[in-house]
Image 1 (tube, rainbow, N blue to C red):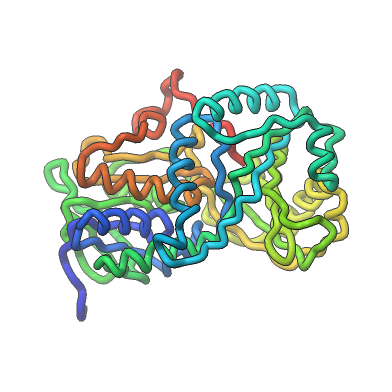
Image 2: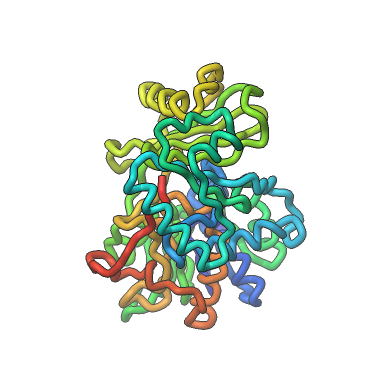
Length: 384
């Protein structure tokens, strides 16, 4: 094939924001031959379908640090990458209905404050005073992170990709990886639908397809894709803007502003793993019920459109990050359980450090390959 280059220093499988972030940080360190392999188009899968939340309110210190580093990048993104990603730090409010959930919130707040996360503990009365459109009759309380917010995932991915290209990164779209070559316990490169590429380092950041990519090299990792449906209303002015990201934790419902309307979604705990991206109109009724219960004024809103995206979920809702045991040169960052976009800057940096330095100063124990089944390992509680 014309212009097809058969070698690279690093081959990255996946052209979402995680892949282009890793490519950028590698190129910034001087790696002159990085190739990103995307089976479709850049940022069209989970990245482009994400609702773009960015927060520091996690229960696990390792996740807090990933997000803190990423927030610093997003806050100065336009300065560094020349792209306005519409980062709006309008806050996240987590709401608790159950006593156990509320106790978990309070425990998480202690952890967050130990790591300098700005967070407020609010009574139902406090919540009602600040956001009068919320129904608080069934709440134990909530927590609010004023530095949390949301941004445009596609614009962020394109910002990383553009800067990576300027540093020499090759991006091959419409190029599906069909195999990973391994000899003597070391990765040798990849096979694609367009040809082979020899590379001493291969990175699996394939998002929902991360488990399938991992199996090309042998490891059967506990990561599975699950559909998440999102709905957007028509122009809606009954709720004063800006609207923070509102997380109704016990029913996994959320909503926020998306000019000129409102964007909302909810998890379906009964849905099996799949790659299904279709919109289920029956499920929409359940989302609307949850929306009206939490913010009765949303009964006046009209749904404009909906779409399906994919979360890649692990048993403990934490990702798998690091070099694959027994396969030298094969690195992964998959299974972010809905947090991939917001943590991508930090994870891209970490991958570059692992590949080039063999180490990182981030704590990756909660994200290790071998953690599953260990009783002492605690997962992430702040997920929807």
